[in-house]
Picture 1 (tube, rainbow, N blue to C red):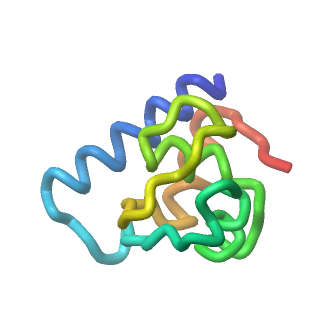
Picture 2 (cartoon, rainbow, N blue to C red):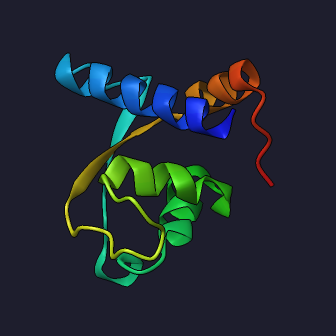
Length: 94
């Protein structure tokens, strides 16, 4: 189920980025130099919790959590979207 969840998040990001549909459903986040080796820090600053580091890695286009994050702007789905997709795919973080 987690793989299907990640695929759904990736589709959501791609669809909303392609439409330039920034606003209530997705937001831009600039990766800082202190965050390059810590996707959980990006998750903490973007979502208020470290449990969405997998989404940060996915949004960066990285395959593994130990790869350095790019020093650029990424597109992240907002928290209600993540919660909705987690419920749909039966994914529990924590």
